[in-house]
Image 1 (cartoon, rainbow, N blue to C red):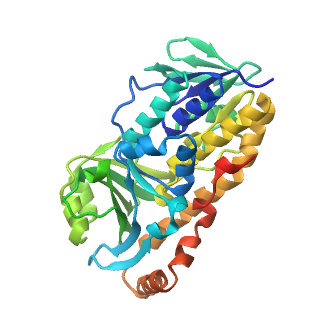
Image 2 (cartoon, one colour):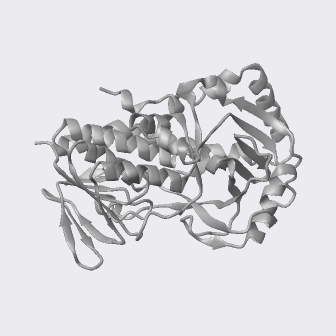
Image 3 (tube, helix red, strand yellow):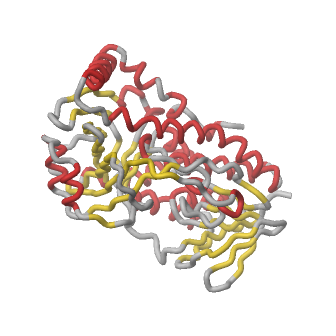
Length: 389
């Protein structure tokens, strides 16, 4: 028998997309979120072609653009210490299938929440889940003792998932020796619709426009030994950010000088969960496979997960569907997680022969064989979960 009732825990990108997709299939879906409202939380995110295909299939690309998403034209690698361009990759040449958007997280959440409402999803906001119990009819228990049951519980509740340790035991995350700051600043008027990666020794700064170009999203990463807590809501002093990136010049320095509020989070490496599903409980997004930000794939992987899970539950009875969901997703997300972990060092080379050689190779390749550089990630960006079956 096909699934008829679902509880989704978590009102982020993956949870809302899952709720909307399942609701469209006529399932009775309740989404439980601990925040009292969907607010302007978070900063920018990159919707790469693989994630955008899911939004397009859901009919949500246009609404996202209407909320200020910016279409990317290029990826530009720069030496942050002298402002010189190392390499430029023109994204416009990829055509419609290679479109890449810069969005404010709140705008994407709003679009997905509207889609969930239209699919008759019930929202239960301001409610925190204390425990999850798999079974023939899995259940969640709230912190106030209330119990809810449904045929399927989808745990899209992030890196601190309540359900993940129930299915897998205690997590074994490790601090990577890297921290990241997040901030947004008003556009000074000269940042093009491109993602700029300003590279330096042991650090890099990423900048790109969001909200129709009114804001510039900043993500700054530094290698350091001092431990920092995980999670991107920890406030920090902007002076710490500027101190870490002292020596950066040009646009990078101007953007950093404009930062008034910033959050800091420690980057921790988590293993992909061995068990994604059991007794009607399924993990989704960061609850199953937290990834470092160096490929900007967190939201995109969650969108892919949502589509595949909905497809499986629509076609098969519950237990078979959840097994197929993990089978279809596990190898791909493991590859993404591994690729993201390997990517940061490329931006953090210290001055010397290795940096000179690497930058020279990038410069030559971006001019002589740009297709080869972009094609190296076809396995990631050309993937289309919406075309299966």
